[in-house]
Every structure is written in C-alpha cells, then in structure tokens.
Amino acid sequence: MAHATSEHPASPTPLRLHGLSVDGVNQCVHCGLCLAYCPTFAELGTEMDSPRGRIFLIKSLAEGRIALTDSVTEHLSLCLDCRACETVCPAGVPYGRLIEAAKAEIERQRPGGLVRRAFRWLNFGVLLGHPGVLKAAAAGLRFYQASGLQRAVRKSGLVRLLPGTLPAWEALLPPLPASAERQPLPALIPADGARRGRVALLSGCVQSVVFGAHNRATARVLARNGFEVVVPEEQGCCGALNAHGGDHARALDMAKRTIEVFERQRADAVIVNTSGCGAHMKAYGALLGDDPAWAERARRFSASVQDVAEFLAREPLRGPLHSVPMTVTYHDPCHVVHGQKIRTQPRALLAQIPGVKIVDLKESDWCCGSAGIYNLTQPEMATRLLHRKVQNVLATGAEAVVTANPGCILHGSTRRPHRGRSDASCSRSPTPRRRRPIRAAASSGNCSMPEATPWWARASCVTSRPTSSASSGTRAPIPRCRP
Image (cartoon, rainbow, N blue to C red):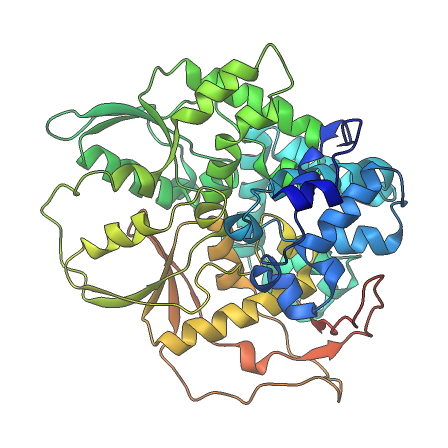
C-alpha cells in the first residue's frame, strides 16, 4: 500500500530490542483487523492491550522514544503470544517474533529481585536445561502428591503464604503419573507392516514426565501406519518455553542442541505432538538466521519438522479402526492453528474414526489462557480466558474436548479456584444445572486425562481496581480468582 509507506516510512537504522530485529513493526498498516481477534483486547477493550497497540509500544521502545515503565511492561507482559493476530493480518506482520523480542528486553532491563531471578534460573536453566534434574523433580512431585502431603498443605492453607504467583503454580501441578508411566520410549520402534518411512519423535521436556502416555500413543499410531520411529535418548528441551518467557540466550543454545541431536537420526521428518514446541522448532530458521554457522542448518531442520496431525493426515489412516461412539468438539491450540497454520488436518483425522461425531466449538481457535507459562505468570487473565473457553465448551454438549497441546489440557483440567469471600462488585454466573463432565482427550492417543468439571460458576473472585492506560478507554477489571 503506497499511502501506508509514505505515512510510515521505514526507520533509517535497523530496529532492535535485546539484539533482536523488530523491523517487522514497520509492516503494520494500523488497519485494526487484529483487534477483534485478540483475546486480551476483547476482555479489556484498551488499545495498548491489542496487537496494534503493542506494536506501537515495541516500535517506540526500539526507537528510544519511551522507557520500559511499569505500564509499558504490564501491557507487553499481558500478551498471550497466541499469534491470532498473525492469522488475520493482511500485511504479514511477524508479531510472534516481535513480542518475544520485547519480552527478552523486559528480562534484560527488569529482571526483578533475587527471588524472581533465582526462580527463573531454577526453571529455565536447571529443570528445562537438564532432563535428568527434571525427572528427579517429577519423582519428588509424585511423592508430594501420592503421599497425601499436597492434600495436607492445601487443606492447611499454607499454600496461600507463598509469594507472588507461586500459589497459582502449585494449583496447576498436574497429577504426576507413577514411575512406570514416566519411563522413556524405546530408542527405536519398528514399523508395523510395510515400511513407509523413518521419523524421529520429539519426546519433549514436560511432555515426557507428565504426558508419557501421549508420547507412547503417538509412537504407536505412527508405527501402525508404517513408520519406523526413532526417539533420540540424548534429546532435551527444544527451548520454546524459554523463548516465550524472554530467556533468549538459553533458547538459542537449546535450539542448536536440538538440531544437532536430530540431524544424527537421518529421519525423513521430525514429528512433534506439542503445539508450542512444533511452532518454535519450525521457526529455528528465523531464530538462528543471524548466525552464519547455523542459519542454513536451522532452515533445513525447520523444513523437516511436522506436527503429528499434519503428517498423518496426508494419507488415510491404516485400518482396521475401532468404533468410538462419542460426540466430541475440537479446541485448536494457538500454536497449531496460528503458529503452524494447521486447521483442517486434526478434524480430518477425527472424522476417520468410526462412531465419532464432531460438533463445532464457538471460538475454537481462541486461546484458553494456558499460552506456555502465561497461566503461571498472569493467572488472573488466564483464568478469565479459561472461563470463556469453558462456557463455549459446555454449550456444545460434547462428551469430550479433543486437543493436541499439553498446556491446554493441564490448564483446563487442573485449574479449579478455591472457594472464598466474594466482593460485592464481582459478577458471578448462576450455578448451572448438573451436566455430564467434560473430559479432555489427546488427539494423538487413547490415554485418559483428569476430568474438567464445570466448576466455573462456583468460582469465587474479588475484583481488582481498574488500571488506567496510556490509550483511550478504561481497562475493564480483571477478576482475581484465587488459585
């Protein structure tokens, strides 16, 4: 658009935050199409909580026209990085890369106090960076839950004494499976019947210790459809959570390590069954694009990465397929539908299963509030968005929600606010009639998940004070549901 170029000329020097290019801000033509698709803008109604407003903030930061104040930090941190805006953007603004650069800059300028820095180091550096430590931590959490200690701590109210958002972290702890369920997959799983190819499977970090059953189901389906599955023993975290959390340096190191490990497998494709990991690994080419030693290797690797539904949907599933008489609805994980542009393939696979009836879900491609670690760092907005998602799910009357992202499953299955005092200004939904519980199911296998019952109408909350914004309009209050 010529008029847009003349009104908003490109900056004479490259725009960078934390050493990362944010020149993509100049592609924005300020049309506003993204506003109606942004969950935080839909909930709050303020310009600076929209993609267009955040792009303006990022551009202003990179040009040195504003400082990273509390208000600016809040608006940027409240972004889900769901990338719904990318799907509808006519100018192709690479918003995901822009917000990751902004969050990395936030961590550089405002790393927080000693406790916060230590906590981030423990999670991003120690747990995600060392699979053995993560497995040991999972064993400890399993004991915490199975021994009854978790129940006692919650009943005593001690969890409420934890600082910051730690009570929300504890509330989101998933039920850890027994040791036998956390065992790694075999290094090589042969194909059933005629061999159609060789694939390498990402077992993941959190995925391997919490959703091992999903990995086994994924490998079983791939093998049954004629693919030899190799599972590299030395693989670790792909770096997606680090990148989304502003930990850019470690994300680069993890990306390089992942490329090295999977290159040695000489597989036809790298298969991923977690949406955030798949979208991040497909973006390694851009992530490492400024590194001459890695740029080409990263581009080749990214081209080999495929989501499991994307991969299997290329040909009809091998039979026989058993009947599953069930009405289901499908929730599109953000980093599948927006990050990888995969929308029809999961539904096509479900349609091949005899007996399955698929019903449409309103706002199926809207974020549920999980968004990587967003539900841990922004529990109030995450709770608000999950409320919206649950109401839409219940309206379908489906017996099960099918999705393909562990974060969505955890967020929908385990986030149940405790009861407490409600402020008079807090609007509470009427208690609905008893419904059949909605179950979360993984699209890659038959493993059962904890039930996500309709607890929402009973959630107690207190309303926070409205926060003023630099933009026009007044931010709607966020209900603080106690985790």
